[in-house]
Length: 174
Image 1 (cartoon, rainbow, N blue to C red):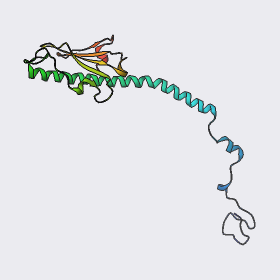
Image 2 (tube, helix red, strand yellow):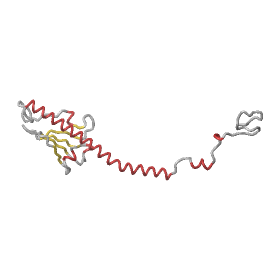
Image 3 (cartoon, rainbow, N blue to C red):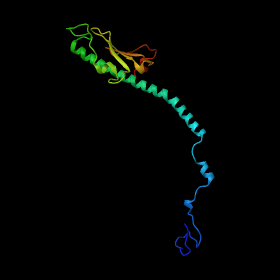
Image 4 (spheres, rainbow, N blue to C red):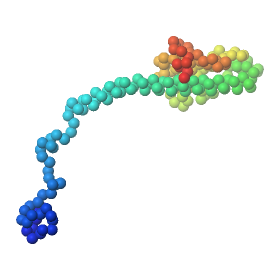
């Protein structure tokens, strides 16, 4: 801004001098070079930190997912147990009806693969059905095939168990 010699309206104007406001000055070359971005070392340091955090968090996340899928399988086993109790009330036996003894009932479709409607993580089956007893099994398949708890079982008395695992029932059925 160039001040006119006649104009004294602006307080920063001196008669006959040119004026550049302080807020419009260009930054010096040294301050411009210091704030132009990230260095390669800073970028690599951030990548290393992200790698360490993900290496620690990913196994924990997978265990959390498996525990949730086991809980869903346990809930399906309990629902299948209720189905079998209703079947026993209607027919007086677990292994079929009076008209067709020896033929165990088929579990409802929603209980045969857990979770229903997507890629199954567990297959539910009715095994060893007799007149007064049965055993339900939830066998891990797919991504749960290598689950440390193995196959979960449940019988007519409500006894929970595991097949193919050295872990305790309390650890896997929670």
